[in-house]
Image 1 (cartoon, rainbow, N blue to C red):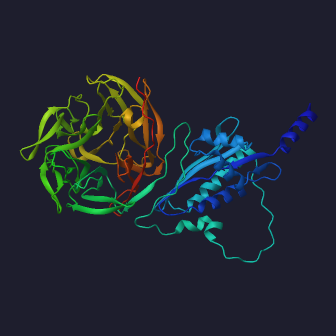
Image 2 (image 1 turned 90 degrees about the horizontal axis):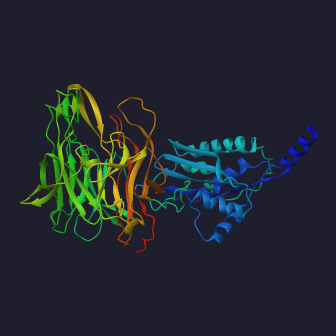
Image 3 (image 1 turned 120 degrees about the vertical axis):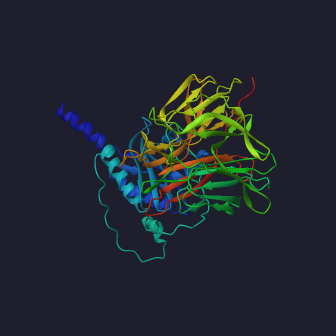
Length: 559
């Protein structure tokens, strides 16, 4: 029996395992396409084990990819290609570089079992961290799969020096390279996520030395093309898309004592030029600190509306005392809604941040006046709501976020039909409120991100787009710290929403997003703000506007 076992073990050891290394999807704010070869070389050298593994050649890999005629955008597709090449394992993944940060997602799949056997998903503070990430992955793969570490390769005789691009031989040397202010398009690699369709290529619109809070799209100058408006805590910036870049169109800067919470764009007054709605909550003094607080000593809201007059952007409304939001309701268009600010109820100890119902607003007599009650339950505020025919039966339903950040689907009476098992919609935008009436002890209320509803004509099924930011550990109990984020496409299957597509994860978090035809090609793009560094009392934040094509879905057939 022992002898038989030894013979069987020897047979296994003699069988070489074929490993397919697919090109990583690289998303970067500069041209780093040459990293493909460099990273492949690193993976190949670290995964080679004489007599145990065979790395399928680059030439054979590229030929197979070209012959397949289809993009390898899922793990299932990667495994199918690996089977064609008689590989036992396949390495897939993606790499994202934004500013000085690097996000590496690499995994090895067992072809027979179609499941990961080694995986690394790491975020680095410097771009040079990719080398550590690749080493970590290779160590894990070697230990989990091959049961050993790679043997050092024999040194070859020194060759005659040749003129070569050292970045190709040593991609880690690239990591300290400068980043352009307005970079060109990213690489065309794709992210591969299990059971969920992968995102396409990303493009960087512009980078900012500040922490962006909000973003909205619309034709703000009447030229028939979509523009982009973004806000930080006290500045509004407006951009026009031209030849792949976002060109400044205008800006409005208020005193730092202001606190912009949200921005929206829509032509509500019907003059052919979209207004820009900025909800503004000024800071007030509480002890030695300035806070965005509520209660008896709260300053009034200073929400304002900006519009292009043909020569410049001017305020047409200033000092509005409401929270404002534009809802893009399928088959109804853009609807402006408002909600009054609440006050601290000291008798009950409950913080009522939003007061009264969410109401539809219309332009009348030079002001935005309340027209109708939107008819949503009192527990839902205007920031956590979307409306749409989710079940595709002609009945408008309510999507909202719970206090625990779960996505909910309710009928118009408020009766809950479904709730997600995961958290969505969390952001770093918050209001500070007195804790149990104590102005010196402030609590935080975090505002949820928007929900965008897509119709079957737009997405193949009733669908929604939502932000999913992932929190890391909390140093302080009231402070949220995010370590990654992405946007998910959730489709309704008749019983629940299921993820069908997602963007490539980013380090830190996504603060806001919008959908519209940014480049005027007849197809909608997804545009969003990525915060790569949060602001502090000692340093400015860093943010980036990213845009990419939305996936194309087949329109449902008529029965």
